[in-house]
Image 1 (tube, one colour):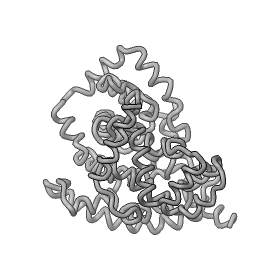
Image 2 (cartoon, rainbow, N blue to C red):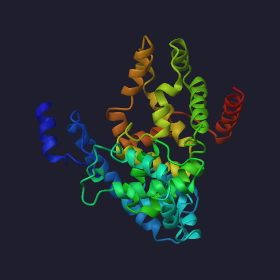
Image 3 (tube, rainbow, N blue to C red):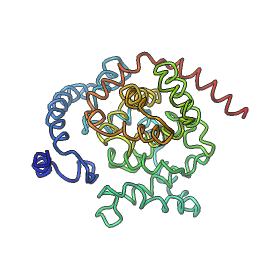
Image 4 (cartoon, rainbow, N blue to C red):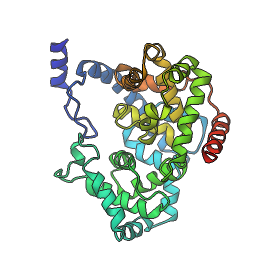
Length: 340
């Protein structure tokens, strides 16, 4: 196995397409096997997308577009599709020059700038494009987007976690202004209240996940209750970082393809799929730390690396998940939270 892995290591670049250095324990053999199969899928999808994108109504909401997005947006179209389906493109066109004026105003706020600067070196230390001495370094772009957004959305300002999300947006868009408007679509609309000072939306959605697990995977819910493990301990980073640094890059981007189109219920689909897939493994936990360790372990390995199969699973494994159900659960937990 070691020789196989070494041979694969010689063929697979140590730094991935997005600039991330592969970790020491990276399984090059499994990755090479997956990637050779996935390239065939990507090529097939790219041809279909190229035909679709020639139409003027290319990404208007339709069952065909939804199906295409669930099967993955090729890299060359990802930025454009995200911009259109999220409403970010329309916002940018309605507000010409706004990003640059927000940035100029934001730079006058020393407290905001300090908060952003403090986190720059902590953002993706394993990505060569975000290193301070990279040429060009994406730290400057990241700084500008976060400072402009902190000025634009004063109720949020700058909150930890936003740097990672913005970093991914920059890797995809390669453009400050587009990254800014996509961040606005996520923070302002798709993930309501995740990043406000009280993080009410985030707290509510973690409780909603708890209820959904009770309905769909009751044995795991019972285990959590038995060992007194709160959902916030095991899933808060899943929610706040939208699976960045939790799941492999390509898998995260495939999740985000759907997130921009179908909005926040995708996060519940991903979380439920991970828990359901590894239900037997989680149920082996015999104490509090054990449960936490199991939840860390389920985000690694072949199941999450095989992003194409993984994305098929998130739409079948959890079963039906209506917006109405999620909204009802959100209302219940929001009112409970506000009366505490």
